[in-house]
Length: 429
Ligand SMILES: *[C@@H]1O[C@H](CO)[C@@H](O)[C@H](O)[C@H]1NC(C)=O
Ligand SMILES: *[C@@H]1O[C@H](CO)[C@@H](O)[C@H](O)[C@H]1NC(C)=O
Ligand SMILES: *[C@@H]1O[C@H](CO)[C@@H](O)[C@H](O)[C@H]1NC(C)=O
Ligand SMILES: *[C@@H]1O[C@H](CO)[C@@H](O)[C@H](O)[C@H]1NC(C)=O
Image 1 (cartoon, rainbow, N blue to C red):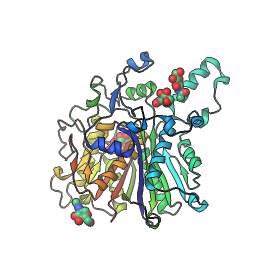
Image 2 (cartoon, rainbow, N blue to C red):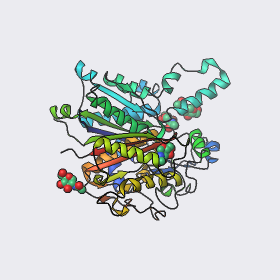
Image 3 (tube, rainbow, N blue to C red):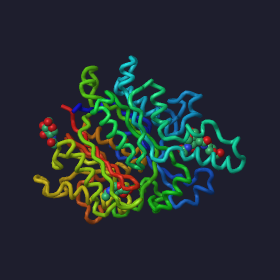
C-alpha cells in the first residue's frame, strides 16, 4: 500500500489567520470565543438563547486578522461563498507551507482536492429567499446556484491552481473535515492522486443557523455574559456547544513523492476508520458504541494497539451527552489494554474550549492540531475544565498545555445523523 504523509498545513480559526498564530495562542491557553449579542439586525440576534460564537477575528493579515481582499481577487469575492473564501486562503497557506506548486501537466493531473463544508452558504439562501418572496424572479442572481453548492469550494481551488486530480466534496455535518482527509488519503493510497489538498471550511455564524441549533437544543445557553467560559468540554458545568467558523486544509502526499522533492514531512497518516451510530438524528448512543467502532477501525487500519496512542484530540463539543458518550468510548478502548492500568494514563483533550465547534471545518482543524501535537511534542489544553464530571478520570490536559513525546495521535469527529470518523497520525521516522 502506498504510504501517505502530511507536508503542508493551513488554517483560519477563531484564534487567528494562520497556523503559527493559531497554534501559539492555543498552547498559551487563549480563547477565541466572543459575544454576538450586539450584532445587527439586533432584533434577530438579541432574541436568541445562545449569543456566543467562535468568530474569525477581522483585521489585517499582519495582526492575524481576516480580510477577504488579502486572499481573493476583487472580482472573485462576489462570486465566492464565505466558506469558499476561507478555503481558498487556507489552501494558499498550506501549499506555500509544503512548497508544492504543480506546473507540469502530469503534476496537475496527479493533484486533487477533497474539501467540504457542513452547512455551506446559508446567508445567500436566506437573502435570496427574502428577495424572491418580495420581488420575484428578477432578484435571483445568476450566481445563486454556484454560490450555494458545497462542492464549489473544491471547484474554485482546482480552477485557481489548475488541479485535475480527483475533485470531491464531503458533507457529513461535523464529521466533514475528518472524512475529507480520510477519503483523500485513500485516493493517494489507491493511486488516484500523488498529492491531495484536503480539509473543511465553514462560515455560518448567521442568526438563522444559531436559531436552528438552539431549537435542536445543541448550543450553550448559560454563558452569554462570559463568552470565554462558554465552551467547557468534559466539565461538570458544560451545557452545549459554541458555534464557530474557519477552515483547515492539509496537503497530503504519497511518501516517495514527498521524499523525491525533499519536502518536509509533518507526520504520516496511518489510519482512518468510519462508522454509523444507527441510533438517532442528533443524540449519540450513551455507551459511545459508534465512536468506539470508528476508533477501533482506524487503529486496526493503522496496525497500532490502543496502548500505543499517546494523545487523543477528542470531538467533545461541550454537550452533556456527547462528551459522556465519547469519554465512555475512549475508556472502553483504552482500559483493559495491557500497560494501561488506570484511565489517568490516557491523555485526551478537546480544543473546542478554545475555538468552539467549527462544524464542517472542525475535523480538519483538529486533525491539524493532532499533527502538530506530534511534531511539537505538545498537547493543547482543554480550556475551562475546572471540575471534571463524575466518571471522567482521564488526563484531559486541563487549562494548560502539557509537553509529552507524542508519537501517535488520534483525532475523533462525530456528526449529526450518527456519523463517526477517527484519524490516526504517527511520527514519520
Ligand atoms: C445579505 O443581506 C444582508 C442585509 O442586507 C447583507 O448585509 C449581507 O451582506 C448579504 N449577504 C450576502 C451573502 O449577500
Ligand atoms: C460573509 O461575508 C460578508 C462580507 O465580508 C459579511 O458581510 C457577512 O457577514 C459574512 N457572512 C457570514 C455568515 O459570516
Ligand atoms: C517515540 O518514538 C521514539 C523513536 O521511535 C522512541 O524512542 C520513544 O520511546 C517513543 N515514545 C513513546 C512515548 O512511545
Ligand atoms: C457518532 O455520531 C453521533 C451523531 O451525532 C454523535 O452524536 C456521537 O457522539 C457519535 N457516536 C458516539 C456514540 O459517540
